Amino acid sequence: MAPTTRTRNFIRLTAGTAVAITLFFAVAPTSVHACTGCCHKACESQNVATQSSKKASTTKSTPVRLPRFGDEGDLVLAVQNALMQNGFTLRGGATGVFDQNTRTTLRNFQKVVGLKVTGRVDVATAKVLKIGIGTTVSAPSTGNFPFTVATLPKRGDQGDAVIAVQKAIETAGTAVRGGVDGVFGLGVTRTLEDFQRAKGLPVNGLLDEATAAALGLVAPAQAPAAQTIAASNVSFTVDSLPQRGERGDRVRALQQALQSAGIKIRGGTDGIFGQLTTTAIKRFQRLNGLQVTGAMNAQTAYKLGLVDAPAMQLSVFPVQGPCSFIDTWHDPRGAGRLHIGVDIIAPKGNLVYAVADGTITRTYHVGRDKLSGNGVRLTMADGTYFFYGHFDTIAPGIAVGVPVKAGQVLGTIGATGNTSTPHLHLEIHPGGGDAINPYPIMKAIDACGVTTARSAKAQ
Image (cartoon, one colour):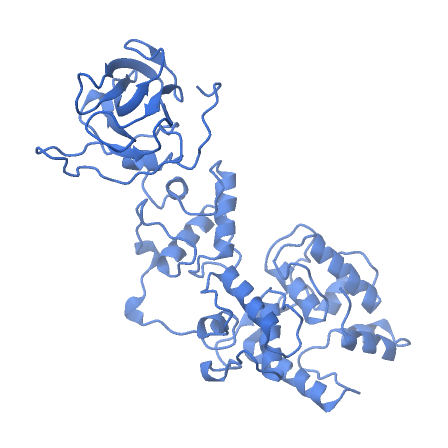
């Protein structure tokens, strides 16, 4: 994490100068061109970087609380970006989290510019970094972008334009591989891939229009007004949830739901399902006792209120994974019959579990029950019953009149009866009446990815 040549030269030139003057030049404001003694080419590069910075953002002065270790947010990002802009390497880039990497880089910075080395953003450090007291906070500009799509640098280019791109990448929080050297080579290509991946953009390593717009290098493309849809009008089903890499109003609706649930998304509701949204989903899942995947699934959608919860809620999924199932409710089944259950496809021999506490009120056997094959009926205290069909075997001890607990093994997956595919046919009859569609109920507790058998304790 060594300082830049510019910083080292300055320290040598000002060894006997007052600290206040040292601090003024160590972080020169963009309106001052501190280029005394450098070659014309270096001065030219500094001018380009300064002009690009002016075009990419406007500034406003706002007094704010100084960030502390463990803080998160825009002010921490401002500190991290200021450190990197002054030539100090920050491992992990500008993440918006005041972590150990930030503290280490801050200590290096304080040591180089002659401040007390604390690793904290104290008043003296804030003045040098211009954070907190008369803070300069970057705000998006409405125009004057440094490039057009036609003038964007490409692989193989060198010079000031590439330097401006590299600085924009670092300002956005992604460390440039190989540093800001003005060469658009493999390092910049790989860095662009890192940035695109984090933002949920197509990963191609090119400085294309979408990537340049995300970096603030070109004006963002304006979508036709007729295509704009309010996020509040977006609706979902358990089979049409937003996925990683998706962009648009559906993602924006998801991001708004996360924020309404108290989950902050670094980057805001930008309509991009990238790493930042994935991280926010993981945080929500962790706080709500859900399986932490970072992906949008039915359980997460129900908890966020994006999809209406099913009429009945169970706690145990009936099949040991791996397995799969889709919604086949009321699909035709021949002889005028409609499908009134859900078929959960799984390998023969996988375990089948009781979805609730109850009593076995009927058993089915392949010799006499041609459609269902081997199976059972499990009835709850309120009369609701679950019909299980196509078992390979019924578990020992499972018979009419036997009480069972949720999670207890009832049998194994098979293909008995009117089928040749190993699966469980499951029906749900609330109160002993007509069957209801079990698909959304199963999606809410989907455990097809759980391949280990439930423990005896759970049973």
